[in-house]
Length: 300
Image (cartoon, rainbow, N blue to C red; front, top):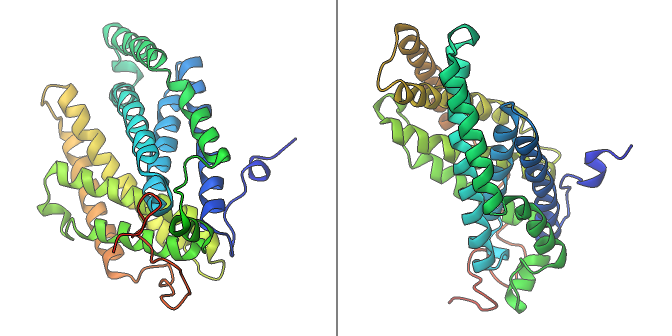
């Protein structure tokens, strides 16, 4: 039996940017394809969840590798991934709400609404030809059509992936820090935005960690995952409250307070810790600095 890791190997030291992105794109395309197949072929909650995770990982990769990707192609893929992600989010919110009620409290009417929503979303995604998205991503990556062209762009594509990775991680980290350090002072929307930023940082960290085998990224990855879960609990409780038309019971309020406390401690610890990745080597002989390549030209 062929293992997934054999079909889609992780990154490794010494890779160029083009090979690194292609490996990530092919793996995420397979993950998106599998998640959507599960959504169309089963009634469980795993399909929407797995599809959304894979789509979110893809958008993180598209942002991280922006300097080597064709702008219009990247923007088109990103926009379509977000559209599918949002559609599946409707189903996930409904599934989370039902799960929160518990089997004993799930009325026939609520179950019927959930099933009807699933069928409507399936019809919408079929009409949008969502199942063609992953094969298109695969084709663009394998053919090279997704990559920028011209001498400057080619230099970046063939340059070391660890330099691009270090810059992408720094950008993602600064995006996280821009939200502030006090979660208790943030509004719900701001905390949700922070969670999305932490997701980007976590997914990029998971992609790029193998580029530096001597660096132990596991502790900070675990902390980011725990923070993401705590913030996700807050988001789910808020979504359930909306579905209950603003009615929050005592248990939900207690769970929200606990999740906020946990998230606040995790976020402050993450802010206080040094970044896990090495700094980009500014002395490497790049023909063109990262982040300045347009479509086959150099901005100067």
